[in-house]
Length: 65
Image 1 (cartoon, rainbow, N blue to C red):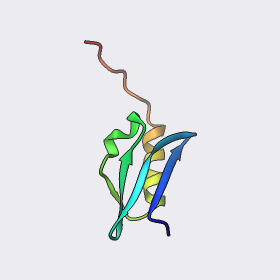
Image 2: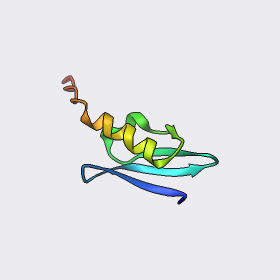
Image 3: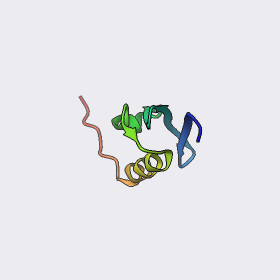
Image 4: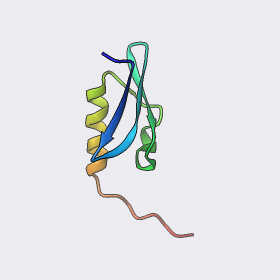
């Protein structure tokens, strides 16, 4: 396995996975995936599954100040 992966969801660069010991740490690139910043995954496939599930959820409208 590689030490780093770029995760793309629907042609959007979601973020980077960087190997850290036995796990991979996620670093968000796209703002919609910032909730996963610093999340640890056992392998790249687990990370991609979690991000795809997140992407399928309807986005909540942001309140206007």
